[in-house]
Structures are given as C-alpha cells and as structure tokens.
Image 1: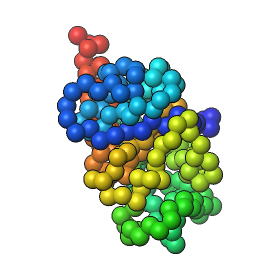
Image 2: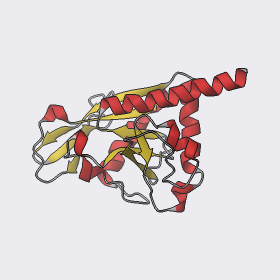
Image 3: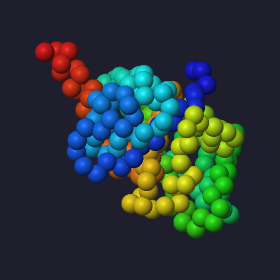
Length: 199
C-alpha cells in the first residue's frame, strides 16, 4: 500500500436541517449522501470543488458495498497538556509508539477523548498508523482543517464535527454516533446503487 496522503482534508459541519447543501462547489449528491449528519464545508480551493470529493465518495461507497466499511474506535489519552494516541488500531508492543499533540490547557478526563474513524476494514491498520504519523509530525493540509481547535470543545459546541481525508478515503469524528451515521449513509448509497443496477 502506498503512503496515504492527508493533504486534502475536507471539513465536515453539523447539518441542522434537511435540504440540498452544495457549499463545496461540486456535486450536490455527494453532500446529500451524508445529509443525516453533516455537510461539506466550503474550503476555498478548487481541489475540493471538482473531482476529489466525488472520487473518494465513490471509493467509500464501493467499500460499503463490499461490506468492509467500519467504524474504528481509537482512544486519545490526555497527559500533561497533550493527547497521546497509539500508532496502530491493534498495536504490538513494538508498534506502540506514542504521539503527542499539543493542546495547551486542556482539562477533559482521559476517557472522554476518542476518535472514531470511518475506514476500510482491510486498510485500517495502515491508514491509522499513517494518520498518527501525520498528526504527530506534519498536519500540513491544503486548507486549515481546524482539528486542534475543535478537540477541547464539547460535541454540541463544535463548529467542525468531522474531517475527511479525500485521497486516503478516511473520515474521522470525535463522536461515535456521528461516525456511525456517516457509515450508514454510505451503506445506504451502496444499497441504492445496487438496486438501480438490478432494475
């Protein structure tokens, strides 16, 4: 597996009402795929407006159709002003390197911190290891992703509620029910696509 890219990270915002959202300038159908939970925030760069969201959505829909789309829980431990996360979703002792993400004066208890990844079950270990490396060493993106600003907030206070690495086909949230909603949305699209193909 080639090293996944996290350069194009699409921000996901809370969707409060039904309707067609097309804030990212591309295919409205992609935004509507996720309409039970989120919409795609306007990112301001053409890379997000043409191609990348639809291509990633199509790949994730294919993963859902194959029954491999999963929500993976990943603890993020708070320790002395930093979040620590393992490299792998199923780490061996050799892989259990810790990543520190500076959060300043963050006082939430350890058990309240977790990320929930919507990911291809077959690729989860490689993708989460790459995510951990990127989060620890780089975090360089085409447009600001706002992750570090949102982590200290309670879920109902967050402006940005999810992040979608378009080239890596990896979505993460800080709320399990939201991650499950996104997974179910892709599974629904996969079912609808299959039904159309059979008709």
